[in-house]
Image (cartoon, rainbow, N blue to C red; front, side):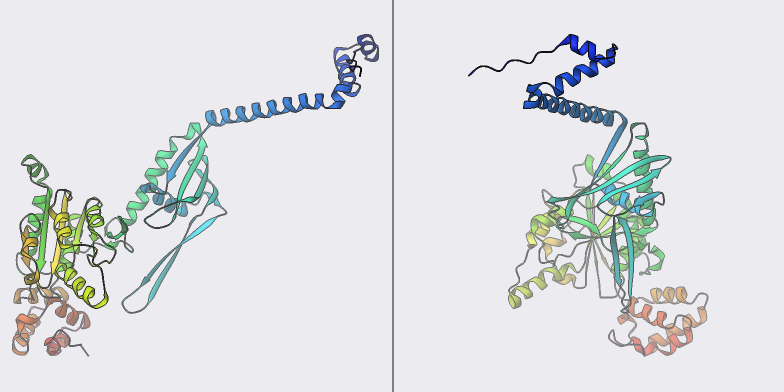
Length: 448
C-alpha cells in the first residue's frame, strides 16, 4: 500500500487569491490549511486546536488566580474560635448587608409562674452574603462541613470566610473589635452563669443583672469579712507563687436552707465583676477526668460553685442501691480535683451545704476548704435591717414588728427567705406584714 502523499501548499495560488495585503494572505493561508488540508480534516488539526484551547484556558485560570491573590484577601473564622459567635451576632444586627440564607436561634425561657418568653434571632445561615463595611464591600461565605463534627455537641464544624480587596484588609481587625465590643456590651453590668456541656463551659441562659452586695443581708460583719478575704486572695498571686503555694482558695458556706448562701455568692460575683460556673456533681455522665478538665479550664474571672456538696455522694449512693445508678465521679476524684497534682491554679471555689456534719474530714482540711462560715437563720439585727430595707424610715413599725415576732414565733427559727417572702407579699403594707407574722411559725406555712 502506498504511503499518503503529504499535503502541498501553493504559495503562488495563495498570493494570487489574496488582495495582496498581509491580512488577506493570512486569511487565504488559513482557509487553504484548514479547509483543503486532509490531515486537519482527519483529526490532527482538531487535536492541535484542542491543545491550544486547553493551554489558553489554563493560562486564563492561572492568571485569574494570580490576580485574585494580588487583589483580594480572605479571613477565615472557624466555629471553635470565640470571635465566631461574636461575628454572627454582629452581622445579624448589621444593616448594610444582603442575605438570602438565614438561620434562626430561639431563646426559650419558662418562668416560675409558668409563663413562657420566646425570642427569635435571625442570623446569617450557610451560604454567601454581601455586606458593605466602612465603604468596602465584603463577601461573607458561611460553610458547614458534612464530614467534621464537634464531638462535644454533635454539630457540624463550620467556618465563616470574609473576602475583600487587599487594600481594605485593615478593616478585618476593626470589624472584629466592633463585634467583640457589641458582645461584651450585652454582658456589661451583668453576671454570666456557666454550666458544663461535655468537656467545656457554656453560658446558661441569658446574662443576669448583677446583684448588689447590699441586697443580701447577712449577720453583722459576715459579708465584710468574706469580701475582705476574697479580695486579699485575688491580689496575692505573687505572694503565693514566690512561696511555692498553690494559688487557689476554697470557701464553705454552711447553714440551714433559705439563709442566703447562694444569694450571697451571686452578690459577691457582682461585687468582684466575676461570673459563676455552676458544677453539678450529681450529673450522671460526669467522670473524674472530665471533672478535672472542667476545673482546669474555668473561664477567666469566674467563681466555681459546688452547691449542696454533702448531698452529691449521698444521693449517688441511694440511687445506686435503688436504681442501679453508676457513679461517675468518685470522692477521691473530687479531692484530687480540688487539691491534687493536676488541680487548677488561680481558682476561687465556693461550696454550700445544709449539713456540714455529713462532710468527710478529708474535704474540710486546709487546701481544699480554707475558709468556713456559718450562715444561720435571721438574727434580730438582720430582721431589723431587712424590715427597713423594704419599708424605709418606718422605725416605729420596725420596733413593733420585732416585738410581735418575739411574742409569736421562735425568733431563732426564722430564715431570711421566710422574711423576704413575707415582706414581698406585703410590699406596700407594713401593717399587714405585722398582722401576718404567724405565718412564719413553720417553713412550710404559706401566706394566705
